[in-house]
Image (cartoon, rainbow, N blue to C red; front, side, top):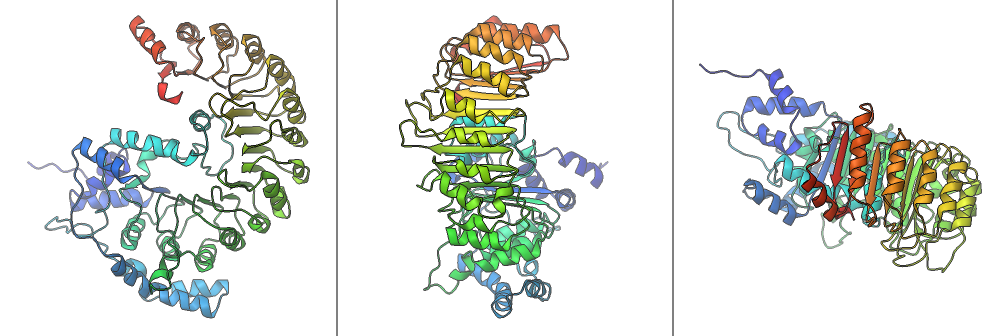
Length: 582
């Protein structure tokens, strides 16, 4: 007797699978294909991620899953298919550049792009693999998927940040803002359920179009590590995903214009694509263009066409320049700048404050440290991140942050190996003078830098910022147990410390016992910390079942000593030993 699960039951089962597993199940039978399509049709979030091919190959080999093999479409054939559609839209744009005409051109197109491309994936009768949609995809098991993605998703797009800084961002309990942020873990927690991993960066138009056609109801689309950022790609997104409100491209770039190739204009990014995007998505509120190799003129066109943005990330591009002068009136969150060039933070700030940018609530800037006096022009700024480097021996710019009343402050200094920090005791007091509502403070630098703060700085901190909930500090400074003990007067939720050689078990155990709100403790490269901290965490959680504590340590030798003792952890305690984060 044959027993079959009905479609609703299949959907309930598939809901718990990762995206690669869903795609594999889709190839089993026609009934499974319908169930998977129905499930992902209601999905509101999609991330398309092109991983390094060698890492994917290693993961595939480990799982025993082989990639599909068949002839790939040539680039020219894919371009010709898209060219038939794009020519009509391009003609309309050239003739009548008004906004409404773009919508008419798309609406009156008699051959929609989804009909030109090959749509069927499986022949429901003979069940043979027929299309090219998944030929570029090497699917992995959940465990290998997580191992493969941990580096890319956590660190690869924080290349300018230290691992400790990136880890602290990802584990923050206070979300910096309500939109996507390249440095914060603001994405869905069960990310593997929403992400499609490709095995190469250069995907065909047909593959991308067929993939998007299965996710027509998504509100957020993230594309990472793909080379085909062009007008055609933007056109496909607007056609297949009409409800998008948040769009993100990270480490994506189009090919340069080639006058000798008649199809080259299709694979270029021009103002036509951005005009089409803004007209198709009047409710687009979030746009990320990070590491996309865009020039100042290209960024200017993007910002001029997308006037309703509330969140904009244009960091790690060629140059910001005057592009940020054209920000729309709705802008609330801006991330910009690049640590690899010489564009200074003072110049970027002046351009932002020129017009609507002065009204942002959240600001993150990357660049060379300079004068910050322009902060006096900002009237709503409450959350600030500065990622900077400086060639000056002892600059005195950070005290100008004291013009602001902040709730979140992140300072990260790079290129400072075995060097003193730009911030010192005097600047520390001055920059927090008007921030009594500060809830998050993160000050980090390169490994072995010298943080020029002392115990009195932390004592003063408890007076200046009595509502502080998160503290992240690193760097060989003169902080001792005495300074850490002062933090017991704060309603801390998260404490992250790295590379302080004078801090011992005594202060950490005291903080753990006195601060009942503390939920996350991270200690990296702390040679005076021993397994007694773990024992104290066990005692604290055992005595108070309502307490929830997550303790992360990076000492491999301590991990071995704790394992030898065979300690039993209560259910409300999680202890992690991660030597790689040191």
